[in-house]
Amino acid sequence: MTEPSKVIHVRNVGHEISENDLLQLFQPFGVITKLVMLRAKNQALLQMQDIPSAINALQFYANVQPSIRGRNVYVQFSSHQELTTVDQNAQARGDEPNRILLVTIHHMLYPITVEVLQQVFSPYGFVEKIVTFQKSAGFQALIQYQSRQCAIAARTSLQGRNIYDGCCQLDIQFSNLDELQVNYNNERSRDFTNPNLPSEQKGRSSQPGYGDAGSIYALQAGGARAVPFPQMANAAAIAAAFGGGLPPGISGTNDRCTVLVSNLNPDKIDEDKLFNLFSLYGNIVRIKLLRNKPDHALVEMGDGFQAELAVHFLKGAALFGKRLEVNFSKHPSITQGADTHDYMNSNLNRFNRNAAKNYRYCCSPTKMIHLSSLPQDVTEEEIVKHLEEHGPIVNTKVFEMNGKKQALVLFENEEQATEALVCKHASSLAGSIIRISFSQLQEI
Image 1 (cartoon, rainbow, N blue to C red):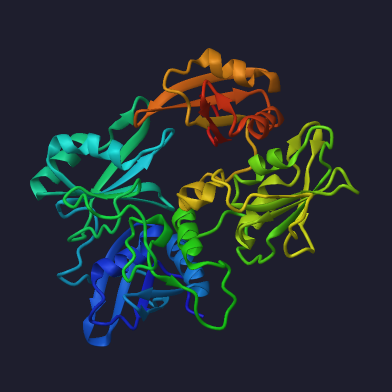
Image 2 (image 1 turned 120 degrees about the horizontal axis):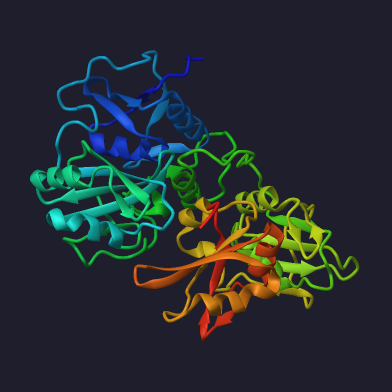
């Protein structure tokens, strides 16, 4: 077994595979500092910023066969601990001026979208393309200008500055990519030179772009080993959300989709409340309250990974004066029946769109909830009145993001916030159906 190294050796790199292709394959796992293409051997050497990033990449690709342009490539640790010689076509990232900027957002308290980035960077020149993605370093974006001079001006002016007061700090370096590949115009990527691009993938793309969270690259299940992620698109979304790794305590190998929930409060719980809670961790297929055991319920999730997230994050959660017991069920699925609620086609399932973003926000219940889809003229007083029956509210903040009203509400404890979420998610406030999730912020 080769000793772990931040240098990764890639084999079967055909002539049709470019430097950019390889960069895209490894960008979800961390910053890439050097890349050497060994064309005569159909190989490449790629150096990550640190060893943990390289380990995350190889652990992920041990279970998911990496493929570029239809060709399987094979990865392993290099015997080199450091690349000391870099060929003339592969420069160290970050120092050589280029028209494409790599932007990392630190202390990101508010969501950053393609529109926000365009507003921030367009004063320095025409922004041609923007691609956003999540990796171990945090939320990042690639910004392509029309000229190198514009990119230099933007980096000089914006490096170290905050997008919002006291948060969302910009860390900017030059990328060594030559051209950004954008396949879709949506909230994750945008080609301002081609407004006619589709917003979503129709069928399978032959060259998925790193700007689409559902297909960061052609991650194809292969080989005899068990593949932890049951769907290819799901695997890419998971890679995008967690920087190529998995949350601590999550194996990614579970294939059981149905969860048994016990120690519920039968006087206060119902199927819709359970849906509001469990849909934070995946799409819900069906829910069944067990009539012979009124404090028990079965919840069938969209796949085994989503079920594992629910079990991991909700085990022991407090709700309606009880501590929930959440375990995998022996039943592979829930049979349809008169006492079964079917949510398969519910438009309230969160993971039909923006799966990577929703995976990224998965966490155990917190004291803070995030409200979206609010009426434009909503006030803090109206929000407090809507939620205060569930417990004392410590603080609230209403803000606007991309022209849409959102809010943060801090309760005294996690149980109160959880009760507010299960009772008021998808409820009507001044004519708008609001959406509620847990926030990982500690304070407002």
